[in-house]
Length: 268
Image (cartoon, rainbow, N blue to C red; front, side):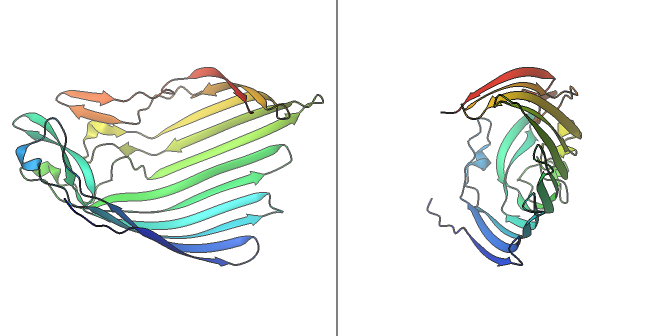
């Protein structure tokens, strides 16, 4: 197959002052034709998929204030995808069939905010907050699919509406040139669906993960040793859920439960 595609990015920037910058960008994305290569594909799934294209607009502002101690970034975006390529699980003659299909048109829009604040010489805060509305505008059901495949207006897989992150770091200088570093962070996200067919068994509820660390560092010599505590609230979650027959398959991440560790680092 011979196929040409175009992609690129165009942007304009305007400085309101020495510390505040605004911008607007337009991006064109392209993903070429694709073929089904699943072991259980059907004869009708041998034709090439159409290319996927996207158009994205983003408007934002970046500011550095309070004597360069506070950095803030804010962005608003909107993206449209045509001939969106996605995996689709369907039942044919009682068997689950995986298909790569041109799912139709989807769109994402939202707002993102992140910041970093050097509150004192020893204390630093940082964080981020985002809201993303990712929806299936029109879904092209593959030939022979069940009527339940109509998911127009539903949530795009792997796209929680809300995500947030906060972190605090505190450094204690010692007289011998060493530093004690205390750090903690918390990340949270709202409910997420992992299956484009909106299977209720592949929905992960909202969850948050809390981590912390204490470290001893000598940056003159280039070494750092840290004691880490991950998922201190012992919150179980899954970054991927899938179904097959009467089973639900669950991906288990490393920090699915509370654990502790030691990290050594040496810079040369």
